[in-house]
View 1 (cartoon, rainbow, N blue to C red):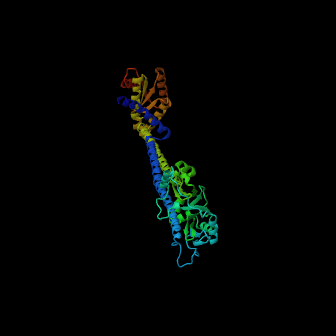
View 2: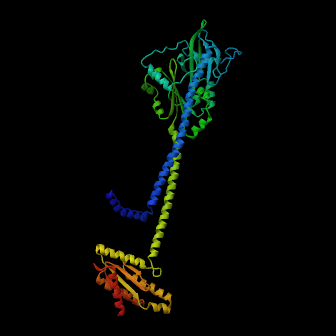
View 3: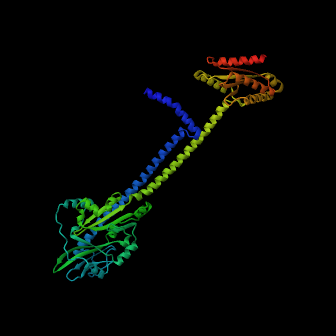
Length: 512
């Protein structure tokens, strides 16, 4: 611990030098750097918080929309099963006061009825979109007389049960089970396609068989068949021709606010419906092979619904790409980060400007406090500091220094006879003449009313005498009478003794 403290003490002067150099070269100090670091950290924190505050609610709403529409698929299947069951009982979708088979009541997404296999007649047809002839034409293409296949238990039964439990509907609220119903794809009627295209896609882009579709006009219709069963001497089949996606959207009570949310977040709800054989439920691997987009959708806000029927499965995949949801959150967070960094830069620049102004002010004050106001050379304070530093270098490194003292003769008489203004002019002229003969490393100071002193660095005895003669000559040429004395410090001579020797030399010249 002591060694570490010693190391820190040794590093402190170097750090102070680096800080001084940084301030001198760039104007930045530790305060500026600290403000920059704090501002950057706050900007990053604000951007992360903004992203989280925006992204989490958007993902929650997007997930809720997906779950809501996925539940609507189960509701739509319940609607179809109810229609099939009740059509068979001849108790639903039929007004008892209306003539049999004449109605076109129902909704725009489903048509229900019963067909007599013996005569080929349609019974209880309720179809707002399909003309009777079109319904008969479609039904003639389907295996109406085929019986629903009977499920055989095998080793994959538990895997199927687990997959249906995970991806299927929770329950069906009618006695008719979907395993007793067959499902087949059929072409959409022209009237239904036109009506669906007129409805618009409500922000939902659908597709089938795993392919992206182009809106409600491309919706696939499905035929659901229940039967055949015997009714007296005839065999009959109840049927439903359904636009399952449109029906699911209708029963969901799809809100336009969902569309606004998806539009504002630059995202869209993807809906894909496909038909598959029950064999895809043998294992998770077979399921992912049949649904290659499943793994990709797992990285989205996705919901999968597998609806089991006797001959094949209806698979509906709903998803909202959360990368699109992230885009708007990321944009706002980036804006917050940019504004924060700009604000930080402004604070740092203002701090830097203040530091530079403070530095210049301190330098000016320091210069003013060490400068004689009249002659603009160093004052007594600066002289004492420089002389003490020179003597310290002598003691530490053996570097000698020289001292020259200058005393003006008759300066009091100049003030008394000609006034202080003339005396001030003499002092300024004296300082100018003395400074002209000195090196830049030498220091000229006014140490008294009419006294000047010169500090010489590393002088030589011969050159010191030459300098004294030159200084004396310059002053005499300017009409200034003065006495000069000089001394060079010795290895063992203290500062006071060197100063005393210079004074003694000056007084000796004055007496001559």
